[in-house]
Length: 118
Image 1 (cartoon, one colour):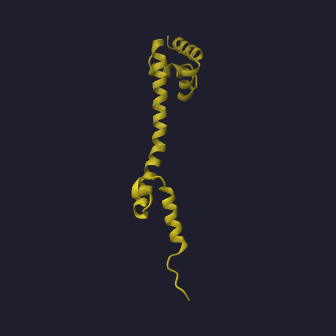
Image 2 (tube, rainbow, N blue to C red):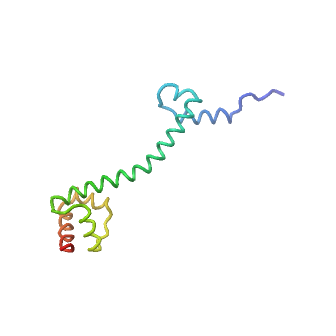
Image 3 (cartoon, rainbow, N blue to C red):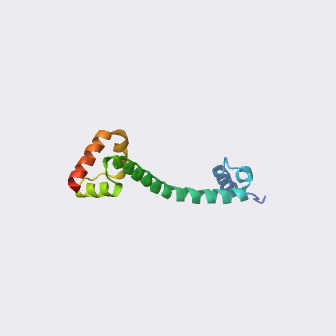
């Protein structure tokens, strides 16, 4: 009976790694030993990046809101405090979007906050 030398499981495992490493530079895309480490590291970066993306977008929304309320004579923290006092529940993404796309509605919101703070 012939002896099985190189099973398909081993080849499939290696092929999966090399498929994931497609497009990498140099031996990282062709050599299994090097590609294995590169794919593992890329997975770590991807996992971390998914967490960082949430932080980055929140920072962006806060910067946009802050820039929109400064000409109205408020700063970001005063504006957010006024929204809470006025029982206006809008998230930062919606507020940021409103500040960019619907300036009139945003200025009405700022006037409402100013009334509450006064």
